[in-house]
Every structure is written in structure tokens, then in C-alpha cells.
Image (cartoon, rainbow over all chains, first blue to last red; front, side, top):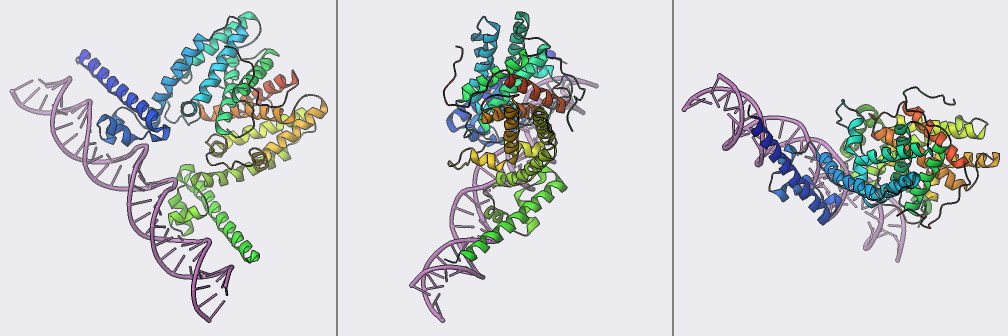
Length: 216
Length: 216
DNA sequence: AAGTCACACCGTACACGTACGGTAAAATTT
DNA sequence: AAATTTTACCGTACGTGTACGGTGTGACTT
């Protein structure tokens, strides 16, 4: 086997894939999110509709590729907005998260609100944390809060809790834009502060599989 | 105009609509959620596919009808699980909410995780609270907590905050079943307790449209 | 009672995602 | 060099949600 030829092949494939993603971006920019269809995308790059499936398993994978670009931007913004104070750094990350979700509802939906069907059984969650650089940043800032003593407990559990609250806020704001949450951004920040207060109240244990005690 | 005839008309229409919903339920039971298609549904009741649209504006409205039935059941269960202690009553409601969402992910999705496109501009949120009896129950139990002095502040704001946290937990568990949240039910309960701790820490102001102060 | 009208229902048609199978060229093996 | 396999792409076809325009039967008006 000629491995350099195989590598070149892979590279070319990646290039064409990138071209498709670029065309998809253009289509969305010109015709809106629901204007992105496989057929239009194929026409745009001069392929038959079915040829797109050589590069993406299904439409969801295309949407994911678009969303990943957007999420990379989120991570960039988070890193650019990093106050020294650990708590303020945490709030800054939340602020960027909120603006991202509220400003890119389509991308937010595809990543956080649609069923993940075909998932490789290996590397359940490390994968996701690696893929989503934003999550890494959150964990880093949680560690800073732990070091500063404003939070106590397991870093991953705390980060997951904060993510849960932020996601709950953003996703409800996206789904129910008419509901009187008040100013959207302010609502997310308020919920973030509430989560921080709750977390500061006690030491956060790690996440386990033991079913907790519950009434009834 | 003969109003009694018009009324009978409405009634018959409602009956046929109910028949369609029943057929939809049956279809889902027999062939699964994605087995529910307009064509199959129409065939089932002896109509042409397009005739279904005399009773539902679109497929989403059919899914909503199914979900509303399920949510009525949630409200029933909540009322049957009502400890005397206000905090335990709150936790019991959360427990039912969790079991409902985790046990009926499809219905949960259609109500809480899909865009609400065509929404009548009048009665923005009262409508929703009225339609979702479960929300009423939450507000009632919040009032009980306020009366008992374990929480302080605006009832609707507190209820919305608890909803946000519960929804964040449930929706993430649904969307990322592989992520190590630990035992799903336990995770929701833990997040609920965290929210209660955060809420207990200070008086919760009502929701307003003033943009809150934020870093950066 | 005659005329008008609303409405329940349907047939046709479109664009969509995508399953299936084919075909020809390129890469690899023999 | 010949044989084989792999690959890149495509044509056709199915089932989907639903827009559009009909059509006949009942109800309402006059």
C-alpha cells in the first residue's frame, strides 16, 4: 500500500468536504437556514444530490459542520473575555455562552437540542469535551474558582451543573420567545448567578450512577 | 344564523378531531413515534391525506395534541404525589416532572424543544400556563414555600427558575444519553436541590425587561 | 322553494431527505 | 501488463409534509 497516496486522497476528500461546507455557509447566508437543502447544495458545487452523501452521512452531519464553526468562534470569544477575578471570569464565559446561543439559535439547536442518533460507543464523553472547546474553558474557570476557594467539590460536576443551568435558560428562551422571561441576556445571567449561589452553598460531589433518594 | 346548528357542527368537528388523535395514538403505539405519518393516519380513518389538514394545521399540531394528553397525565400524577411539607411537595413535583420527561422524550421534545412558529400574539404566556396544568401546580407549590418562609420573592420568577433548571437537566439527559450525568433521575433531583439552595439564599425579584449589568 | 354559499373532502403536484443499485475510472495487487 | 478491487459519482425511485385548486353536498338567505 502506498500510504502517501492514501494520505493525499484523504486530503483531497477533506478539501472537497470543506468546499461543501463553504457552499452550505453561503447558501444559509443567502437564503436562510431552511434554504439549505441537499439538492441546492449539490447544484451549487456541480454535483448530483446523492454525491453529497460521499462526504456527509446525512443532512444532520452538514448542520453539525456548520455549527462546529460557530462554536469555535464561541470558544475564541470566551478566551478574549477573561477577567482576572475567577467569579467574573465564570460570568464572562456565561455571558458569551448566552450571546452565542441567543444569536445563533439554529446552530445551538443542532448541537444541543437534536437527538444524537449515531454515536460511536467508544469514548462517550471525552469526545464531546474535546470537540467542544467551550466546555474545556468552562472547566478551566471552574478550577480557578476552586483554587480561589469560592467553590468546593468536583470540577466536572460543577461545570456540568453550570452548563445545565445555562442550557436550560438559553434553550427555553429560544423555544419560547414570547414567554415573559424579561430581557433574555439578563435572564441567563440571573440564572447563572443563582447556580453559583447554589453551588457555593455546599461542596459538590462527583457525578455517580447511584440512584439518589427521592420522595414517593 | 342558527347558532345551535353551528354548535353541533363544531362538536362534530371536535369529535372527528378526537378520532384522529385516537388513531394517531394507536399508530404510535403500534409502529413507534416515527411511524406516525399523515398518510398512514389518513388511511387509518378512511380519509385522503389532505383531509387531515381540515382538523390540524400541520403535523406539529398533531404531535402537540398527543403531547397534551401526556402532559395532562403528568399533572394528574403531580397532584397524586403531594407531601405535606412544602419543600418535599416541591421535590415531589420535580420528581414527577423528571420521570415524565425521561419516560416520554418524544412528547417532551414536541412541547419544550421545538420551535413555536405560529403563535397568536394575544395572551402571550397566560395561555401557556393555562394550557400546561403542570405549571399551575408548580406555582401553587411555590406559594406554599413562600407561605412557609423557606423561599422569598416573586412566585412566578421562582417557578420559572425551577422550571429552567428542571428543563435544563431533562433536556440535556434526553439529548445526550451517553454523557456521564450519572443516574438520570438522581441528576434532575440534584439540580433541583441546587436550584432550591440558590433560591433560598436570597429574595427573588420579579422578572423584568431591564437588561442586567454584565461584564465586558 | 330557489338561489347562494360555505365547507368537507379529495386529486394532483412539488420539493424534500435518502435508500438502492449501477458505471466507469483510478488505484492496487498479482 | 493484466486482473482485481476500490472509489467517485450518478440516475432512479420511494415516502414524506404540504401547497393549490377543484367538486359536490349540505346549510343559510331571500
